[in-house]
Amino acid sequence: DKVIAFLDKFPQVAGHTLVVPKQQVEKAHEMNEETAAAVGLAVSKVAAKVVEATGTDQYNILVNNGKDSGQEVPHVHFHIIPRKAGDYSASWAKSIEGTRTGDNPRPEKLPDFGEFTGDLKAVRDKIRG
Image (tube, rainbow, N blue to C red; front, side, top):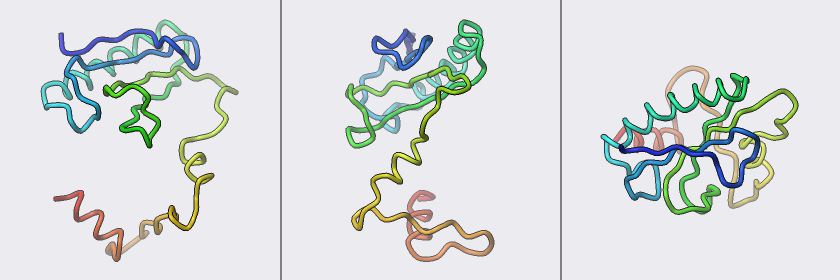
């Protein structure tokens, strides 16, 4: 009763399904813990049903949080998009690479060994809280 799932009105491929919490929030981090737990369970269960219905066990689970990430409907929702060989043209990472400018430089690579330094350390520390 906390989550609903339905086929996307504008599907990318057959079986493209949305999992939507009933809690009225725009972004994933705004869900309360009870809703977030229900969404996680629902995404897993619905993905299994999509696999069964489409016959492919390859799929993307996507969520866009905010206009700049591609969110068109201001209510958090999770896409389950079945995939098959040959229908994948570019990753989200490649789409970001296509927008690199002086204002959007590539972050420094994570170190293979040792401690984080500089901006990476600052961001990591903020995430850790």
